Image (tube, rainbow, N blue to C red; front, side):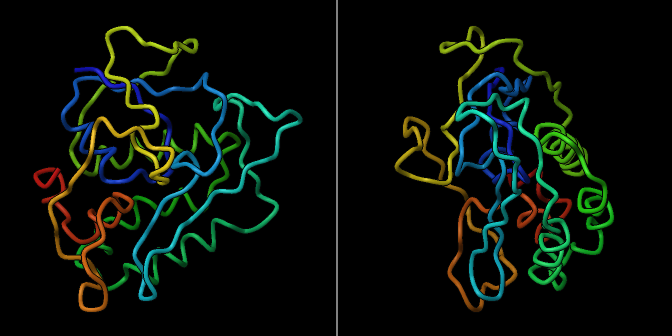
Length: 204
């Protein structure tokens, strides 16, 4: 099965669950960029509850801009804030020290385009989890794609904007602040990776 997905920043667990069960990943780059989505944000669990990390993007001259053309905004030091948030949330998790050096470059170097940032993060995470899947990009926008399972907007942080024909019910696993909060499903894949380590692939 081939899947068509939106790009995502440190994607949620559901995203990787779909990747594990597919044979090829096609990433949408010719859509009109959608705000308030996983394209530029992820959710992590902190000592104070769920925190959303958002990558600021340069506002386009027009309301509609293609995802492939979205520029990352570095006018604020969001990279430092994101890294500090992740460090504070997961430094005591079982596998933080094992994986964090692989992710550190994404908070140091500056990618021009959001799509490039997300793609490099995705490739690194897939390698760490052991998911070897071909990854390509759309060459145009197709409302009804051929030969691909269309998951665009199936995986979305806002229930009101999420297509519901493919519900996701993840199995609970031990989370860093389990003594404070009930199990929180579908956080960023790094929540699972830092807590489950080499068992992440099997969990998915």
